Length: 138
Image (cartoon, rainbow, N blue to C red):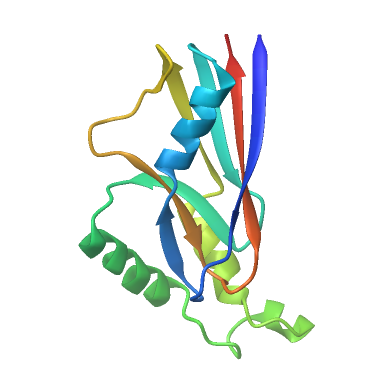
């Protein structure tokens, strides 16, 4: 069995943002040479997420609104912020959207549905953060 690992780095200019990283993950799969296996993509920060969904701007706008309703950015609302942080909401948003995705690899391709794309979700941006792509198989 072979293994390939790569860190992708992001620094979003806004506090909250979604970046389609499907192309970068596909490039790492190509570089790995793996034809059959699994691809793990996970955020390495507790205020960021990786998820799979449609690359449609209305959906992303809906996510922003929905997440803000569920976990508003209100520095006075979260006990976590008593530590001097102001990102209690970002931790909750990450918990909702998830840490990672695992995608099957078949014939050297990510085996996803027709509209599925892989996204990096940022909830406490304006600083450098990383995502790990780990590919295993043969």
